[in-house]
Each structure stands twice: as structure tokens, then as C-alpha cells.
Image (cartoon, rainbow, N blue to C red; front, side):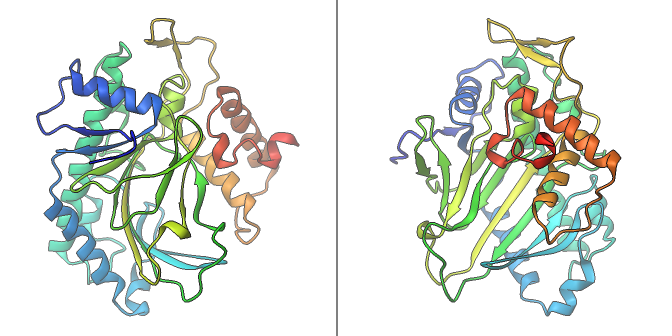
Length: 345
């Protein structure tokens, strides 16, 4: 099929860490920061079942959904309101096995359904581990250099988000985005969309709608992985525009965010002339936990409605330090990080 040069890579035959498919994966992540993988081992039947579960839950009464509001482990029901409407999602984060335990989940999420979610999370985690090993070997590091810092038995870490955007009665101006241009925070993101509309910034600086490929998963590099790889891997701006979406339909999507453990160091590697990565003694110390905290702090500060964020002197000074560290590393500009007022204060 014609994908306008957008990378589509079949890994059904496996991925030799030094083989052709591994090289295609790395090059796609260096040039585009995005790709579509087919033959990745997660069946369409399994993906369809996850959408079926999410839709079934979203059809429950509001009171039933409120029984499992999202908690500090990133498990539960979440709803967001904006100028253009409301969207809701089920979030399944936490350590391996915590969803199965059922804490903070309503009775609708019975043992069988929770087990299905755990199994899906495990499959997505395994796919992430495969890609992280590909990156490590390419850069001349131990195969488990990145993957060992993504331990699903430690929390907080990777998160599965099932998203529902109800249809809008009135569409906003066509220039108003459904999802503004941004980069993701973590290591990798896997997206299973039900419809098109996702656009990415191409290597030439134009916008391209990501093609829908049967049984494919969209993969993109996040800011943390870009930092970690000495900016060798690209964290790319992406957005969703209303004029690219079906009119009058609900939008359903599912994303698995591959996140490193909180103590993972993001800024201790530098890129050598030969393309490998080595430890940088002079790098600014920055962990995933610090980085994620700063990003969350800054995004909340930008939203005046979310006034629960601490404004203590210690928090502001810490945010400034981390923001400057990330600014020095030169990624995440697209998410508004460098425009955060604390950096300029």
C-alpha cells in the first residue's frame, strides 16, 4: 500500500538484534521518530477485545464509573473536560499484577476481565522490551541496558490508556486541534487507533496523516528515549485535527506508554562520532522520576484551572533546575517545556 514514505516494518519473522529488520527500526526512529509495525505478535482479535471491554465499561452509568476513579498508581477511570468537550478513559498502570488484584476497580471489572487486561499489558510490555534491546545493541551497549530500566514489577512505570472521545454536536474551527501538537514524555508509545486522524511532522517539516495499516501498531519515540539516546532517536511532534476525523462519530483509541522506572538515568550518555553511545561524565544528572515530575508540574502550572499544584519555593526551584537541564539537552521543545515561565524567571 502507498504510505507516502511513512515507515511500515514487518517483524513477523522475528528481529535479529543485528539484522535487517533491526536496522530498519532504528533508522525509522532516527529519521521519523514514528513507524508502524506489523507481525508484532499481538493479534487483532486481542486488540478488538480490549476495545470491546472499554466500550462496554463506558456504557455503564456514571455512578458505576465513579466507583473506580483513578488513583495514585495510575489505575482507574479518568475524565477530562476542555473547551471542546469531554473525553474519558480507563487507565491501567501500576506494577505487574496490580490490575488483577482489583483494588480501586468496580465490580464490572471482574476477575476474567482484569486478567485479559493484564495479559494485554504483558504482551505490550514484551514488545517494548524487544525494541529497547534493538536500540541498545545498535548503540553498542549491553542488550539489556534500556530494557532492564523498564521493569514492570516496579512502579510506577508503563501505562495502558483506553480513550473515548464522544462525538461533538458542533465542530470547532477547523484550525482548532482535537489534540494539540505535542511530543510524548516517555520512552515509547504504542497506539492502536480505531480511525485515522493522527498527523505527524515529517522529516521535511510538513504534516502527514499516519496511514491505517491492518493489524499494525503505530510506534513513536518519546522525549525520555530521545534524551537517553543522546538525541539519536527522534521525539516527533504529532497532533489530531478535526478536519481529519469522521464527522458525527465517537473516537476510540488505545495507547500503551512505555515508561522507564523512576530511578532510570536519562542524561548520562553521549553520542560518539561513530554513532555509538558512551557514558558522559559531565552530563547533567537527570532521572526519569525527576523528568516526569517536572513535565507534570509544568503542564499543570500552564492550566490555571488545575490549582492543586504546589507552588512552594522548593518545588518551583526544583522545576527550574530540571527544566534547565532538559533545555540544555535540546528536546521536548514541541511540548512547551522551554516556554514554561519558571525557566525564564
